[in-house]
Length: 426
Image (cartoon, rainbow, N blue to C red; front, top):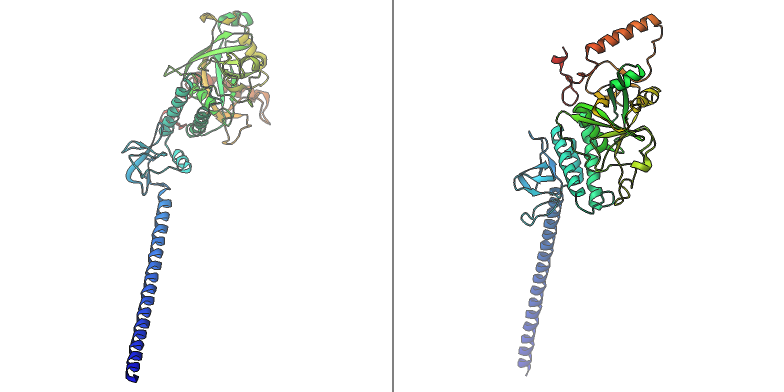
């Protein structure tokens, strides 16, 4: 009995030891499994962080300096495909896929941030920016032609016109290197007027263009009309306006792309605006307040916001409003004139301030030149200069103007962008 008891105890002891050993091995395996799981989770987390960082970086386009200044590349999406600025926005020139919207054919397509687009526009050449403006202008015209569209309230219409205004401001600065302008308008009166009043046939007046912050498209349209000017005439002598028609060297000038108007620049007396709906290229001088005749909601019933587009206002120097404008209005014939009674516009010259930021200056020079300063204020003698010296100087200036053909060819030697051709100048 004792032996059996010892045997039983021995068996029980071995079983207990085996159990403890088995339990210890299970705990080690569980610990190893837990450690492996933690390592795997850490690895997965690191991989996710890396992919997130790479994804964020790849969303930002990096500008690459190439021969074509309007080329950018998008790292991580289309590494070998240059992106250029086309008429309807940014495009992938290789795959012809528009950027800015995802395409099922290319799941890697990413959106181009507005900042990158703005930087791209700022580095464009004049021709590239001009094309961008032309294409945006055509988008505006296309939308405006659709029946029932009111550009002033339609969401797409307001967006497109705002985009066109932003681009046009950039183009004005790119081409003219100024934001403030005056236009010198030289005119010649017909014999029906000169024989009546006995005054010389030639005269001139000045138009100060509106702020490009308010109506940039209207200002640019007139600048381009003047830059390409060939000849013009005042063709209408109405009770409220003096209407003119100007022809350009290229011809076929389209009307304004939309009726740009700002309530901060209304149709007051002596303002200048475009005739017709759509407005232009004919233009007029208001000789009375025409807000009720040409302002918002006039001349049609479909659109209470639509108005004639304005672009400037006469420089009132005490002579223009007293002598020049009344003389044009003194034409014996009223309303639309016979050709023999036209007042001819012989020349138009773009003037910019002598000082770059001088918006309130009276010293102006022809755009793109270093020609003598044109003073639109009344001539006064310099201090210490007697009347004889003043008369001699005025006589000399008059002779020089006659030699120059009254300034008709003044801009012939001015190159694109306002650079004087030195060879021609010599």
